[in-house]
Amino acid sequence: MPLTAAEIRHEVLVVPRRAWLAVPDLRVIERPGWVQIVTPSFTRGGNNEVAHAELADDEADAVIDQTIAEYRALGVRWRWRVGPGSRPADLAQRLERRGFLPHAVAALARDTGGLPGVPGIEVERVDARTAGAYTETFARGWDIDPAPLADANLHAVTSPDSRHRLYLARIDGEPVGVGSAAWFERSIFLQSGVVIPSHQHRGVYRALVAARLADAATAGIPLATTNARPETSAPILERLGFAIVDRFVSYALPGG
Image (cartoon, rainbow, N blue to C red; front, side, top):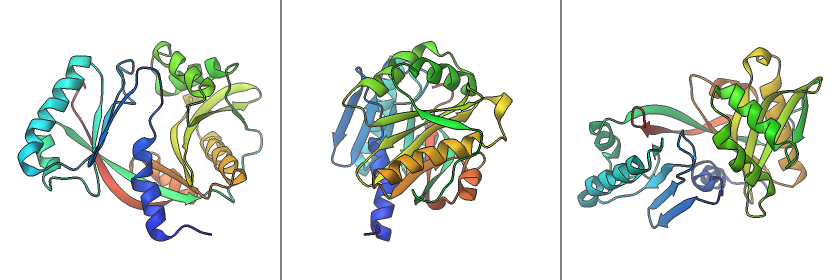
């Protein structure tokens, strides 16, 4: 049975709050109106965020300052998402007064069927043997140091507790792009899509999206969701059949 509009909205806006990578040092802080993840080993970004906050007016400033201090003590980059249902009503303004910078994000979705692959581009599921190639390609695409990512990516493809699947695209056997997805009961959440600069504009990004959707469709999962910047990948995803369901703002401190 197709998902209702309310169910799709839930999969797009609520379910991805749990799309964290379950690495050994991950700490998840959940309570009514609060979802936060802390991962000391991810110093350069990712897996550190306040995914949702519903705070009372009289407690908001103290909680914000305490959260800033916690991440600052760890020396990690992190973000605070302000979207539908966030509280207090002026949460964004309170963050901006503390120096946070906003980044607009589109929350998108499409069904998992009907997106063909790209001839000449092979996409494979990553396992323990190819985790190293995935890490190297990811690092080349984002121009970052691969060393801190190696253990996390290996854990993602070998741990029975992991909900993540990693994908590696090749042209003529050469790794040229990567993507991942967090799997849930009714949807997959697409993450980390990147193509190395020398092979962009050749259909690699599309091939990675198509492969993840095809796997989900085969497993009977009807919906794919993702978050994207309007100035970068959101228009590409819309051309691939994704529709913007809602928008939110991701806040980060400069250099943090």
